[in-house]
Image 1: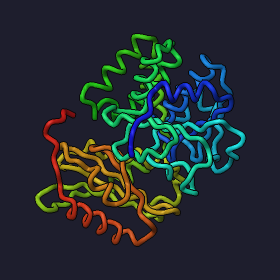
Image 2: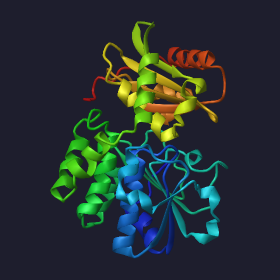
Image 3: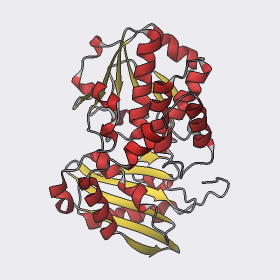
Image 4: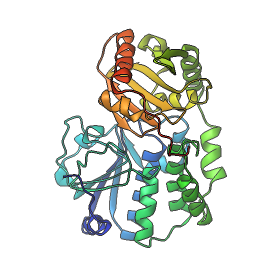
Length: 334
């Protein structure tokens, strides 16, 4: 049965643990980075814990600029470690166990903290609030409940996830903005600590990729809706040497293009085809992603397809859209 454990249960377990492993998710984004780094900082500052933080994948170019990135051991997943060496593993911002283990299971005592609608409650202890705009927002609630002191460093790390996962507040109904104001009031460095590093450190390679997905972008009239589509093959991006995290940014970039109801992207990788949906007019795109075996949020969702010709992959996405139907959510303000 799916249920949340209490904050007390979770932090009683953390307090009783000495060696803690924290993992970023695949193709880590700003919320994965911010939530992991905020937890590490807090557990070391207030609880004197020994914390190792790992990431199987590299970060996108703009996220690498943050000083605390040097605290992460890259190229390692939970499968790289013996469960006997750690008392617990904390998995922030993971919707499923497949997000951090190739084996599809965990030998660690796992604590999952998340905000995804499709969370599978895979942890030994779980705390999920799908009504919050980011995992960092969930942590903010937890820290408030625990009466944690919010200093500049903790507040800035949390703000990173809130700012990025709300699409720089573009997907926000007000919750992310209220969280941001709370953290800025407590010292978070919003402009020089978050906005400027993200805005002015995008690599030329990433820009070339964004130019490519824009060049590939087209609008398809489908069952009365205008759907934006961008399909990129391995051959298209072979010389760019992109990380998975670099590919993640393209759908948000394309979302700014007018004249569509929603859009999807397909990017061919060695391990399969990375797909993403973005909503433009309150269309619930999570329905499509779930039909394709993925997950996420109602207005931003993703999925992975097995290797196949790209025209077949595109056809498969349209078939999923047709099967589940397009649903508009009118009672949510973007």
